[in-house]
Length: 355
Image (cartoon, rainbow, N blue to C red; front, side, top):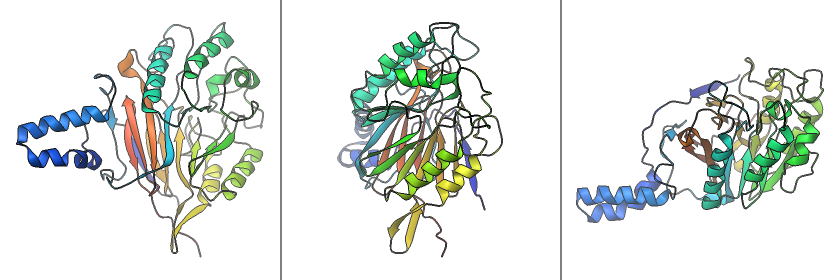
């Protein structure tokens, strides 16, 4: 039986006082009058977020569990990464709510923050570029040069628009996935005690790869050979796993979903991770997705599915979107969203193990 809980991203602009932050402020609160304590709390809040004053305006917050993060949790060693999606950069005029040219300044801001926060790596979840009447390779190189300003490993997930005006080999020839074979459109890498798996759903139903607009964006599929590879990747590791993909896996109907999403979910769900003698959790902790620009969240059979809001939507820096994801030693995950991106706490959830 499939159990789904969905939370569509809200437009709330409320600040959230987490237990972690409260404990940081508790000493000064106990020793000072109320007004001084309030000021100390605000100073501590600003110190914890070393961005420009206006950078967090527009941050939204959401939580699956409704429980503030546990102050006693410890980050998993070396597992803290930056994430963005759907930048759609091209040197073309605005169409509707998509401000293509502005994505280059939004990317500059994102990478500056990621360097400042010293995250371990960055990953973009697809639709890095957008098709243009001309200069498509030049646009891609210009945008990759900005992304490459991150002073650490960087990775790409392929999206449909990355092949709307050029071929997959052309796209792959320009971008860099650190330490990954140049021709690999789906791949895995280990960091800290976690395995990260990048999937490529840019294949037509007949199995042919997307190539220079030879596809319908609604026809996305993961072929059998990639499904078998995914199953082997999950079977061969005793680490917790994070999945990255552009098109969505958390439903079976709708234009934004992978057509054989249910088959992929079954692969993800059959693998569990032993926590204690009598307790297991899903080996796949979370799936991070793009493609659907407004963002959303689902919990399906104890696996979290988080869709990040698009960078390209809206004009001005206040309409940027990116996040930092931190994994903790209890296998919970905290997502800190910047600008329009949504904060979210993904709790570790025990799995039922069939006897």
